[in-house]
Amino acid sequence: MMRSKYTLFVEEYPEAGKHLFFCTRTQAMVVVDEELKQTLNALPAFSGGKRTADALATLSGMGFLVQNEAEENTNIARYFDALKSNTARIDATVLTTYACNFACPYCVENGVKAAVHMDAKTAARTVAYISDRVQEHGAEKLFVSFYGGEPLLNLKALRIVAEGLKGYCGIHGLDFSFGITTNGALLTPGVVDDLLEYGLKGVKVTLDGFGEFHNRKRPFANGKGSFTTIVENVYHAVEKIDVDVGGNFDEENIESFPRLLDYLKGLGLEKKLHRVRFNPISETPQDRVRLPINSELNCVYAEPSTAEHLVNLRRLALEKGFPVDPGVGVNACGMTANSAVFTVDPKGKIFKCPAFVGHAEFAAGTIFTGETSSGSAEELWQRCRDCPYVPLCGEGCQFGSYLRYGDISRLNCRKEFIEYMVRENLKLNYQFRQNKSR
View (cartoon, rainbow, N blue to C red):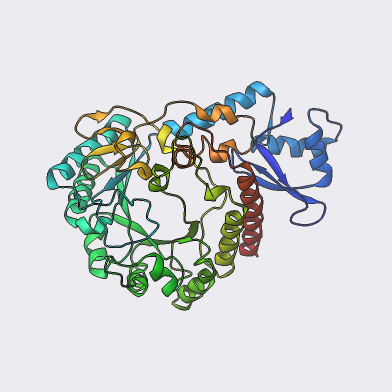
């Protein structure tokens, strides 16, 4: 028996002489004392008694230990195969339009935004294409995420797709629901009530800090601020659907996020929101295009300050009582997933990753001809198979690789960043889980 390479210690936590032991493959976490930690590090040598042997047997069942290298290799190969081949649920993203009523200066779709709307014919064909994928995979669940541009600018297409798929799933006894990634300005109570009958489960909206800080980052196309409109819509929506609030930060607005959380808490939303999550403002494909060939673009997700901000904001949200993301999760790459995961744009083009929409060179086919390319079929995780963090970052983000190097298959390693994030978020997970259990 040996310690799995996909395990790590957060040492001297939650107290001196105790250590968090975490398995990145199974997401199991336990606290071990110094004696057991030394035993684990000494494996396969073992000189403990029955109590220690029993503890090792328990840890083995949780994925912390393996019999040998062959079992380790089998486990990790099965892990990635399951991530990429699970077809029990179809996850489809549908863009109803490339148009947007906002003028965010950092928009990832600058250069793509246009007055292009999905028409009724394409919407109907989208229903047929997605239904075919459900049948092909024998899926039990279908979740559709409507995206844009601003998807609520084309409610007609959204209704056609949602109504058609709800009807198909109803006939076949399948579970159907959908969500919307929206700027929130058009998410009025009337729109929410209207879409509930089509299967609306939840939405994700963005607040880039408090008040004027947000308004500078996410103004309407006419330059007016959007903060008050969005918050008012969120206030009503949380009573009927799941609402995730995201936020994008840089050095200009980062200091306003504590005020934002206080403001939302003052409205009584800390227990009503489904989740809050904040992310750094990142580079865009337009930044990549402007660079000379073979140039390297800065990656904000490799910056130590970014990691610190992410952890601090998550801690602050937890302290104020907001639900947050898991913190230590698996980042499966849609570029290497099977056809149970895909994105359809307003013209009916298929993309494996929604971040690449509008960039024709990354299209994987059309809903009229079928999926002709899976993006990247390589087992890219193999190059990092000895890294303890590979179950979490997988093949890495190929969109990030494209931004940084102009090459989706190039390794964009952010190990130091991930090490910090995992260690600090495990502490938060343990701390607040313990607080809840008291």
